[in-house]
Structure formats: C-alpha cells, structure tokens
Image (cartoon, rainbow, N blue to C red):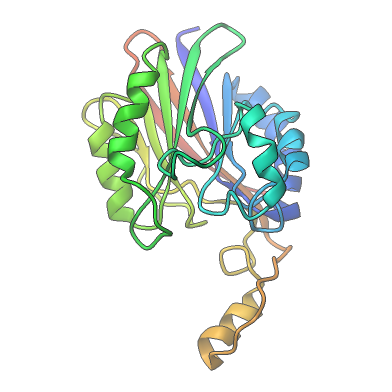
Length: 261
C-alpha cells in the first residue's frame, strides 16, 4: 500500500444527512479503498448537536471518528456519553472543565496510527480558547501518531486559512467545517499539509444552509423570526478524499466529493 486514503465528511445535518451517509458511504469506501473515515456529526440531531443513539449509529456505519463543533452540548444527554466514547470528539479549545476530549489517537485495520484534532474558531463564534495554541498543545500529546488530521470548525475563512499555514508541515491535513458551503480551494500547502477551507454539508441543499428556505427568506425580507426547521430536499453527500504518501507523510492530493443522494 503506497498511499493512506482518508475520507472526511462535512457536517451531517438531520435525518436527510444521516440518510445520505447510510446511502453513499459504503460505496465510496469500497470504490476509493478508504482506510479511515472522519465525519462531523455536529448537526446530526435535527440540526443541533448529536445524541448517543445517533453517534452509535454513525460509528456502526464504518465511521472511525466523529468530530463536532459549537452545537456539541445542544443535546444534553451527550454529556453522559462523551466521556466514555473516545471516538466522539468535542472542540479541544472549549473549557477544560467540560466533558469529553478534543483529540484522539486511533488505528487503521493495517495498524497505521491516526491522530485527529477537533478545534473551534473564535471569529464570529461563541467564546472559546485560542485554537492555535490548543493545536500546538495537542500535537505534544500525539507524538505516537503517524498522521494527524485537523477539523477546524470555524466561520471565518481567514482564520481557517491561517490555521492551515500555522500547522503546515506539522499535520497531514487541516480542513474546515461549520459553514455548510463547500469551497473550491483544495490544495497541498508548501510543507505538505493538505488544506480545504470548508468541506460543506451532508444534508438538504434545497435550503439556506440546511434550514427551510422560505423561513430564512422571510426573516431577511420582513425581519420576522421563525423557529429553525430543517429542509429535506436536494440532499447531497459532501466530503473530501485525502491521499497521503506513506513514505514522506505528505498529502499529495485532495478530491472534493459532492454527490446527490
């Protein structure tokens, strides 16, 4: 095996997103001979957070690690589950007093050691500690990992881009989540780290970033508040496929995936 192939799935949103994972993921794993799967489950529970049952379901669908973001505590029952499930991460730079962990060390079927770091942005986001220093600290604890992948759950493209350069040459890839809009800037940075500003959303795209479009249009046009209700049409599976040279440790290609389901 000359390459390591890792698939990272963009924000899984509600029942449509769960259905897309169940439908598309097995074929992609087989077609691309994927060695390891990371998925952001931040919005799996109706768009807000994730429950223990949903996490167990995703882990049973060949997903090796679930990352999250600013909605991780929206479903309160997850607090009693996350401490006991090392494959479910919460952002590392949330207060240390909160349950769970922000990085993990895992192993592929072939014995390759994979590190995953989950970070939360500070710009236009809920308060969090410095993600750049948190990433540095996590790398000190992941010295046994042969390859490290970072999910940076952030709003600002500049902050994500800066994180890519900050970690270039020290991690295998830095990819962004949270905006639900897949960007077209995949590249390998000068020191060999793969980068993509945002993977996008696995969920209903006939919407405004997952929410029923008529509700959001009315909010912008008339200023009327509405409870967010998820859309269910135009479902797509969005992810990025990263191939890494096993000898050099450098990412040598990133392929965006954008499949109608």
